[in-house]
View 1 (cartoon, rainbow over the protein chains, first blue to last red):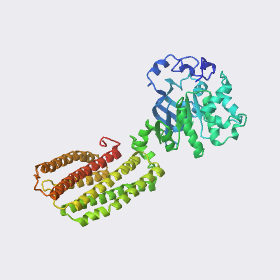
View 2: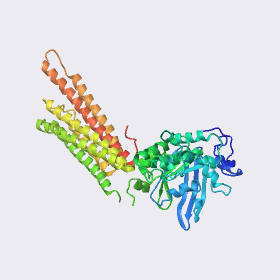
View 3: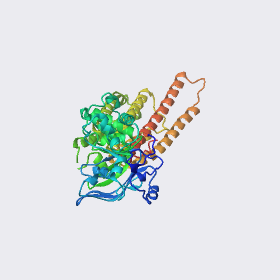
Length: 292
Length: 226
């Protein structure tokens, strides 16, 4: 973590470690009630939802989601197609705002501050909550510029060369690209491109990294590298990953949330408990393949 | 129901483990019968056919490994396989103990002590093994606890039986007129009887292990494992 005195409201991307709630990062002016609310949140919870409903027009995608996602852990979200797992992920950094008929009700808070409050700036939120998608989506720019892009857009202070190198190292890509930083990011293999996207996400030093099926387009070797990386990232970041691959969830996550049809969170617990002895029969049927 | 062939493999595993237990119980029954009737042919049948149990064990072990490697089982399926994997080891050991009993039959050159009812203890252990496997088949957790309780009684009976044999040895008068061969025979009888009692007590322990793994399989409860 770099030294930091910057203020997020000034479009900085560094974390102010003196403020454990970090509420001022989300809003132009701090909200009076936020500190009290955050005090009630369990110490290790970074993302909390209560009675969270999401609708796409008349169709309900999420139904009363209550969850406490712990900090600096990997939380996997699994479930069949259409169960709302990606919808939940996209609520956390308000990517759903971009969908016209999407309506969100209930509470979804980051360190005790509801991210859907009127005073929350979605752009500031997304600096704290990075995202990696299913298909690697590097910009048609050099490897260096891909990683430095967020730093420049957000006018991050400090030595960008150092930050880019550090991000590429953390994304386990540095050794493979250090001699070709000026080549196009699009010339890399699929697995390298995905790690480049992860480097781009972590360069701006977020608190949470959301991953939506980050390895589903990759071969087994590239998948292993991404999985190793995810486990390492959890030392510094909170990782929330949506995956169709239950074994991947079992391998890399600390906590697993099982969403089932109807947009319901049916069970959330320690990953070993979910995969060895789930409480819920529907979860048992789903993970053992008896579902449907 | 999805993954039909996988579900069939799990059902086959469970029925194969039950078949192995029937073979093992049969060996135990024959070994006790050979003892009671001093029937060397039956004893040899138990000893010679032990390789069949070993082969069953190896086949089932391979089935478990294949299921783990190829199907990535989780939850109840995983516990069924993990428990079965442990239970077949207990069954294989029970078969080894049956071989021990058959070998004692071959070594014995006279009737056992009538004061110690080996057959009654043996019948109890057979019943415990059968009941533990019924619990595994029916996923009956009450039966698992019952078997653990019955093992306490069995241990007590085995301890008293051993004491009886030892007391008898102490009370036996051995003087200068006793033939050396008689003394030797007495020593062998006593040690063989003590080993018989110990082996039967171990059969009971394996039945408890099976019950403990069954309880884990059904409820992920490890209370009976130690």
